[in-house]
Structures are given as C-alpha cells and as structure tokens.
Image (tube, rainbow, N blue to C red; front, side, top):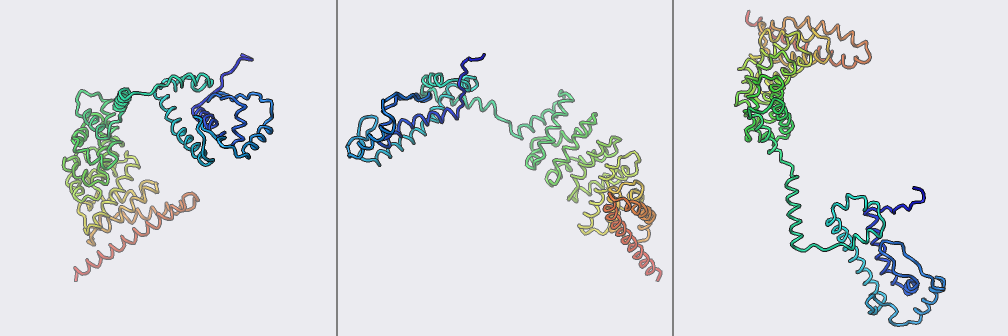
Length: 446
C-alpha cells in the first residue's frame, strides 16, 4: 500500500557490524578531550537505532575550541573512565580502550551465536531478515545463559541427531547389497539395484579387496547363471571392474571357477551380454599368466573365434576380441614364449586374417593387423604353420586398394596413411617368415 511504512531489512552480518560499531562509539570518543566535549551534546543512542543529536546552543567548532583550551591548561582528571576513575595518562587510556574493544569483539560473536542457538527457529522466520532494530533489541533482551545441565542436554541431543544423520561406510553399503543378492525373496528390481550399487562401490581398490571378505564374490559368480539377462550381464560387469589391474581379486575369482561361466556367456546372442563377459575375461587374464592358462583350458579361444566368424556380431565386439588377442600374443612374447599352440589353430587364424579386408572399418582393420603381426611373431618358421596364413597376402592386397582410395579423402587421409604403414610392416614380417621357412626346407633337403 502506498505510503505504508516499510520495515527496515536486516541481516546477520549487518546486525553484527552495527552492534560493534555502535558499542565502540561509546568508548572511542574518549580518546581526546575534544571528542569528549562533543559527546556532551549527545545522548546515549541505541545499539541498533539511529543516534540522536541534542541542541547545545553552540556549534561544533566552538565546542572543539573550548575543549582544546581546557586540554592546553593541563587540567588533571579530564580523562576519566565510565566508573569515574581517572586515567594516569593518555597511553593508559588508549590501552584501556583497546582492551575493551578486544573484549567486545570476542563477546559479540558469542552473544549472537548463543541467541541463534537458543532460537533455531528464529533463523528460519522472516522476522530476523525483515525486522526493525527495536524488535531485535527485544529478542536480545530475552537471552538467558545455558546452565551446565542444559548445555550437557543440548550436546546429547546434537550427538543423537548426528548419529541419525550418519552416512554409512562403503563396507556397510556393500554388506547391504550382498545381503540382497543372498536373499531369495528380494525382487528382481532390488537385485538390479544391489548390483548397480556394487558396480560403483568396487571401483576403489580397497573396496574390491574387501569384496571376498564380505562374502560378495560367490553371490556374484552365482548370478552369472541367473535366468535374467540383465542380472547376468551386470554381475559380469561387477566382476570385471573389481578384478581390473588387481591380481588379488583376479586370483580369487579364478579360484572360484568363474571363468568357465564367463566363457559360456561369450557365446550369447546378446551382444551386450557377450561384451560384458569379454570385459570380465579380459580383466581376469590381463598380466596374469595363470589366468591365460585357465582361459586356454576352458577353450576360450574357440569362443573368440565364434565372435569373429559370426556375421551377426557387431563390429564393436569384434574390435574387443582383436584387441584382446593382440594383447595375449604380446604377453606371450614378453614372457619368453616363442610359440603359442593355443593361438595356432588354423580356423582361428583364418578368422583373424579375414578381418583385415572383410569389413571396411579402419579401426577394426588396424586392430586386425596388430593381432596378425603378433601372431606371426609367435609362429614358427615351419612351412606347415605358415600355411595357416595362406590368405594373408590376398587380404593385405585388398586392404592396400582400399587405403589408396581413402587417401584421396581429406578427412581420412592421415589415418589411412598410418594404417598403410602398419600393413606394410605386417607384409614384411610375413615375407621374412616365408624366407625363413624356405631356408629351413632347403637345409632339410641337403
């Protein structure tokens, strides 16, 4: 409404500053006789209200002149404290004023804190943010100090509240999720939720190390045989994440026989389930020679060949297989093994070689070249072994034609040239193997 008196707005920082400034004005005017004289013309103002000036009949300049004249006379007792006692010197007066100011600065936050503490709902009300100083003075006047018993009671209330608000630890959350997996009466939705929580919780290596201690590995491995595809897929995902770059968890999962079930999942018609099974297998056998031996004993390479040779398999999954093959072959080379019988199957090598030219995808073809290069290095110089790569020359020539066409496109030229360099390297390695086989054959004839 027009003309209506609007309440003055106030916030806590402004309130504190106002109280401090007003209180200090009660002390610091006494720093000089002139200021003291000026103060005689004023009444004591409210800590929160506006100061009010009384008329003195003299202007301020005249008052100052009289005060300085009196000070020049060397009058004793001009500087006095509130209790009437005189200061011995100006220095003692300044020290007293500083001390009072420091005590005031220490007292005001406590005063304000106690007020808020005793009146928690007051902070939430509009009155503290939209009120006038008179009302604030009335609230401050109601302040009462807490007794020792009341303080102890408040502390206990706060402690109980903190216990209720306490966030459970990762271990406690893992226990809850594992309990849900072990509970046969839990709904399918809750089972999915428990697996999703474990997927996040096992990412830190300390949590992954605790997974078996908390009884979580066996339920996860059991869920690999669940009738629900989503449960199987997420369980494999959790196992893969927990064992990634973690030898301890790798050996724990391998010891429970999970690899057999994961290999079977790799044959799934669902590309998502097969991808998560492959992810878990890759995590389990990377940098783990024992895991790779178990993968061989479970005929895992037949599963990889199935993924590569199945036309309905998506390209993304085939890329994962080729990357895993290149890694396994390189690992075999780095561990001092010149040959790898598990990787020398004719149909298996044929499936890898066909990837070089079967799909016009540079990323897939690059990964196929890397896998073939590593497999060639593991192959002996025996002519029989090299026959397994009989289609390699044709695949390399087909790829060369494709790369020549791609170099004419500006956006693909650089990548095509990189793949061409790799193609030539594979061709050189293959020719070296052929020459070695001829030398071996000639030596046998002699």
